[in-house]
Image 1 (cartoon, rainbow, N blue to C red):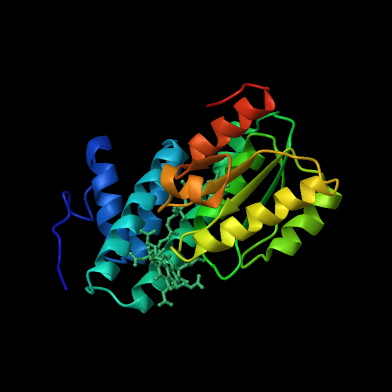
Image 2 (image 1 turned 45 degrees about the horizontal axis):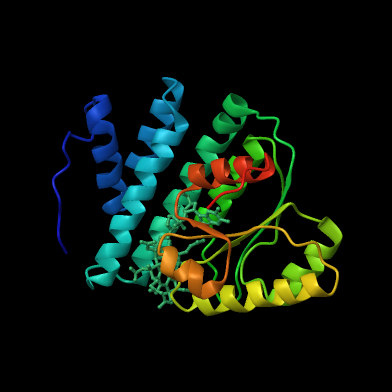
Length: 233
Ligand code: B12
């Protein structure tokens, strides 16, 4: 297994420029205690929680690369996911306190059928709530019919589908098709955004969604602009 050298010693207090690299390093090496101690310490020093989340996300991407290269096994993915979940537990109250937005708008969110990745979806859900949106999060492995049933009662302004697996593109496509068919049968037609680290414009076109993103802050801005009635190309 490759061992990478941290840019700063884990015991030293990293400078702002080093902070990102140090966090990425510790997430990549699955150093749970170091990650959580560093995040905790930085939150106490009033660092921007979104910067800490972004660095941990970058570390997670590197974990995925090691998994792809056969240097890490599934247990490492599980460990990385657990570390990230714990980081979010630390930062979420701070984000909620700092931001407390007042957007109005209802967002229906879920990870599509056969996909159980929810770390990114949960970040998106938390951030949208922090900015004041009302979010109904359906969880993971959500079948198309469940999206439709919940959309009929919740009456969302925007629907967000999350998915990280290549095979999720088909689940997204089926979900979008089912929602569009339901539009013909009376369900209000609202914008559908797909989100996930592996997405791009080609996938969006394949899936038939209106928008895509692989960044939660872009997701928040997109929802703000859509609800403000801006026509986006
Ligand atoms: C953690 C992880 C897991 C954890 C998931 C834990 C959890 N509770 O989510 C566990 C260990 C369970 C797991 C399981 C599997 N995984 Co996995 N996993 C990962 C890993 C390392 C990180 C994913 C992650 O959380 N990233 C961090 C988050 C913050 O990023 P994100 O999800 O992209 O979300 C951000 C944006 O995309 C956006 N966003 C996300 N959703 C939405 C939705 C909307 C509406 C909006 C607006 C925005 C938005 O906001 C987020 C914040 O910015 C990735 C590697 C990677 N590079 O992504 C592999 C990865 C996704 N997994 C992979 C695989 C293969 C699997 C398994 C099939 C392994 C196996 N053999 O069983 C299973 C799948 C099980 C299933 N049926 O779903 C592959 C997928 C490859 C592919 N092409 O399909 C990856 C890419 C690893 C790899 N490089 O091979 N995994």
